[in-house]
Length: 151
Image: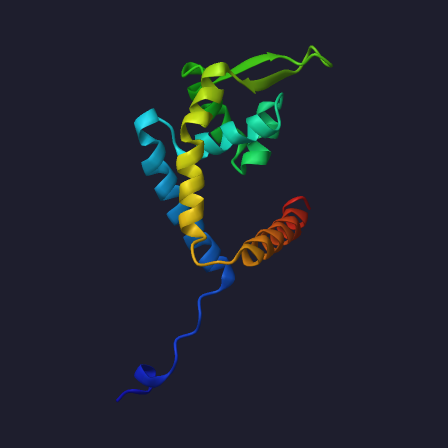
């Protein structure tokens, strides 16, 4: 036997594990949303606008964790699909903000149960208090990393 065969393999880092979860999640969401001509990133942007209407494209990019250029392309596609609309900000008419259209809301409603089922599958085997703890810990991790990103 060789020494490397008997030595235990190091556990993957949490960063690696979290990235793997994100990649598998995105792949599953892409498969789920493909019939509607939507990607996981576009779906994320729509859900951000559902929770926080009237964002600028730059704000939507930050809240969706994509670059401004990626969001510019995404906004063009989502506008062409009539899922979002641009309009002047009521408080500052110089600013253009984005909001969901009725078609965008209907699309989110159409996939809401399927996305919830995907999340339930991901969390299968975890107790409710474990899920709450996981959510709390992930939010702390995110906040810690945002501090670094904003430097």
